[in-house]
Image 1 (cartoon, helix red, strand yellow):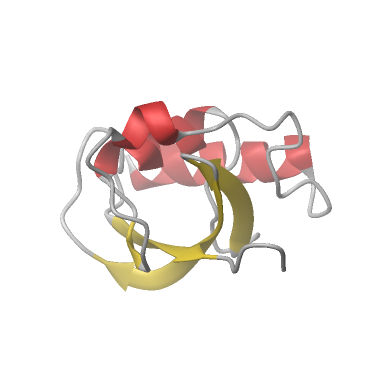
Image 2 (tube, rainbow, N blue to C red):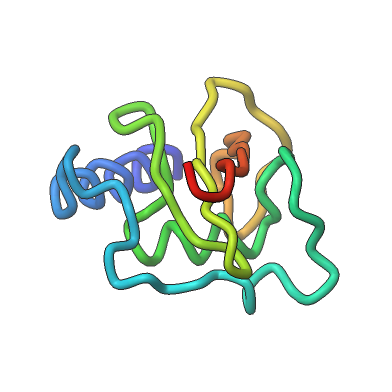
Length: 105
């Protein structure tokens, strides 16, 4: 299973390339995290990890950072070598961090 997920990461990297690490279409992932989402530095919720993986925006060891919009706030999404429990949306249990960017900067 790890191999299959690793291939998915590589395919997403190859499709979007190292220069395309942002959701250029401006898709906002606020609906994925829900209305009770608190803007702060935190681990990415499981559902968001799945959505980013499906859209080719989940960072990985080949592309360690991406950028997304969550409820109107721009975030850096950062891959780490840390591992937590696996889920259907995160079959390798990778720890993904959300880091809010300063407004206007």
